[in-house]
Length: 395
Image (cartoon, rainbow, N blue to C red; front, side, top):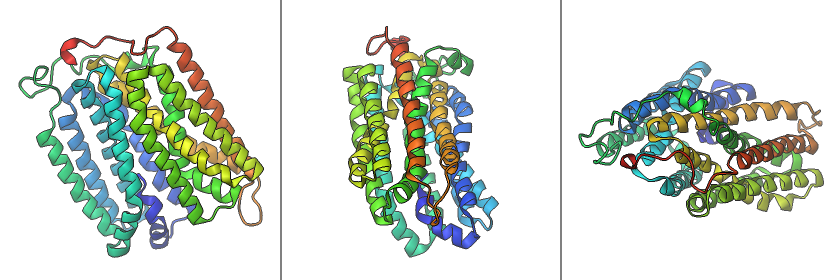
């Protein structure tokens, strides 16, 4: 997902890519990732993560090899699309497996640890990836990555089980899991506030961390590349704290308190970012980015609430449908915020004015506040772990 941030200069130079092509090729990962979610959910419910996830990981390996062998922009984009489709099954496969192995009051904690470990890996991948590219070239890196993905897929296929033995005694798929349809998810009134919450959480987080943090720091506050890198790293550190802590809070404090703390922190950070841009207060950026990452890390709580209210029989479709809004929201916001910022005139150096970024951030802040209000109103009569009761034999 983040490799293009390291190799963008190499790709632009070798393939003569302009900014629009680079952005399109980067964004196709999110678009395909989002599009694959609904069929992925049906496959996870029908065949389980033990089969579905390794097959999709093989798709990602093929995409990595395609990317490594690319001789044109079109082939680069195709490889990136295959990687997006393949990686779409990894996190959702884990969520589906967790829903079968853990009871609802432990799902959020397990998910937080999983995503936190993933974020830790992403945080440590920047410098090592840069070193690897410098040593062997970006094509070699992607070829080696394909081999690592194949080994990981093999390990999952051999070692992972779809459900505990009492649910899946013969190692096959339980007949009850997989019944139902995606319509059952979309027609459930509890789905939409959760989806809106994930769009505001994950969509905004990925839109800024994946693209708009950099231009905001460069244009609105005059940061150098090194300074911007330090600030963005602080956001990732804040995210680690959020991921590792929010699941426990959800399981022990209840969903409303945990979500309110996360979104409240997220909105406060965006408000400070607006103030920093309009006032030129660069010192505010560092604490704001830490809190932004921390609050944004609570996006996994949308999945935890999904686990609490939907039965295991449709869990794959439920979590992928919610995730579709988060990933799709990231792609839409990356483009949409660009349209908003682009309405402002550039200065002689090509930079957009600080107020343009303030307006864009204000829009995501209002969106997040509205999503939180809808969520709290819709869950006002439920307990901390209320919702559809999961049959005991499936938990």
